[in-house]
Length: 272
Image 1: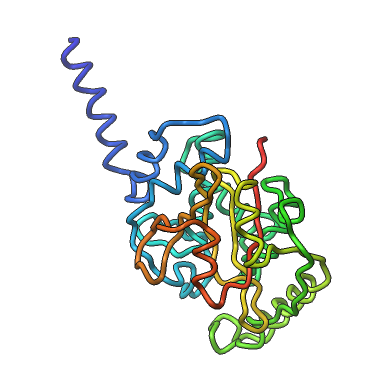
Image 2: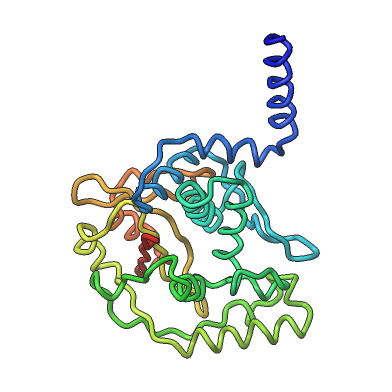
């Protein structure tokens, strides 16, 4: 009788495991990683778990209808950051796949609602603003050495040919309105020359985004900080390295090596 009962439990467990999607299986593995009550440490651990994962550009693009994309086997810089944060939040608050997807939706979409292409937070400045508004993170750039950042943001609508979803005039108009809202706010950034001085003030799990020399664009790239003594290093999905990597030089030297990076903005996850 006991043997039959044990066999039945095994079958039930096996059915549950084998019915999981590949994403759910990876999610379960991520939830088994060591935990931390500090959200920044948790974000760092989740980002480290992706080291070596292939870089795939435009992982959120190409769907005929906007939907939540959950990918663990190929990441770009944005989806690495969003995945690490959402996994960390799920680990600490609701360690279920649904909990992960709920946080990812809130992180990626305006008001946490998927309502067409224009509902996605395409610009980093807008992404930080909306997620700070809901209390998930704090833009700490001003208090770690930031100076005023003044730039007209309009890259998407000025280069609509690069974004098939902007072919519809209604969508283009909505994104243009969002750009106007972004341009109505005040921002700060840390210029390249000031990053070395800022490094000691950064913490494990801080989110950094690199401001762009490209006309109309706010940021080129983003990643997650890990500290070694007073120096900061970057975990990021590298288009040149073709995978998620840890920089082999500190943050200031990395930024100095990329001509189109003009500086950076910094966000820190909040404890909730």
